[in-house]
Amino acid sequence: MPLERSTIEALARHLDSCVKEVRDTEKLTDQHPEMSWEEAYAIQEAWRALALAEGARLVGFKAGLTSVAKMKQMGVETPVFGYLLDRFAIAEGGEAAAASLIHPRIEPEIAFVMKKRLAGPGVTLAQVLAATDFVIPAIEVIDSRYRDFRFDLKSVIADNTSAARFVLGGRARPVEALDLRTLGVVLSINGEARAFGAGAAVLGHPAAAVAELANHLARRGEALEAGQVVLSGGITEALAVAAGDHVLLEVAELGTVGFRFS
Ligand code: OOG
Ligand code: MG
Image 1 (spheres, rainbow, N blue to C red):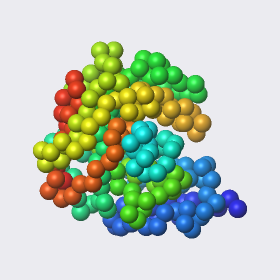
Image 2 (cartoon, helix red, strand yellow):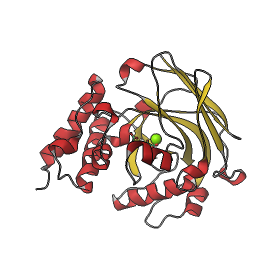
Image 3 (cartoon, rainbow, N blue to C red):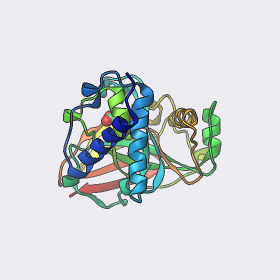
């Protein structure tokens, strides 16, 4: 039986309260095993509407589960897409309060900033590159609202793909000058290099994830807009972090970005 609109909105409010009260919950499909893909994205969108009504600003979108390392770690096989709000942003070199998060993990990513509107369907990798203003190193902090970070795809879609915080920094560079496939990344915690990879880990080329995102948005009547930020997905598995940790991402040719968990 399809979920009622009131149930979709109640589930969005439930996830929102988990964020605000910093507590976990059982995954939504435990109570709603018949949830469809459409309903999962409808919950995510109802949650976004709730945030925008509170005055939050949409600053972009994210792709997730776009690398084999991430798919293996989470036991799923398809990319998922979520949104980014201004309130998720941490200043480069700044701090994130560990007490405001349930069980945070960090991911090394390449962020794209759009110079032109990019609307699907049928967006290609080359169109993504042509519509990109610059790329810049990004650390995403994911924080599943689900107990023990365990979920299925529909539950994680409803949960805005675990989006919690992100930081951009280092050197912003136009894509023409770079081969994003061979860009090496090193993610360190407290000075110890803990995860390594290269851009090609993300669907063969990080811009492929942006193309998939644009085509996904088109199916929902949306597009990427000029100035929006896109996180293309974790290049390595995600690493757990705790209060006091200092995290640093180094990306070949793009410098470093970091912050501290206080
Ligand atoms: C889902 C979000 C994954 C990525 O970059 O792969 C993600 C999760 O693993 O909790 O953001
Ligand atoms: Mg991510």
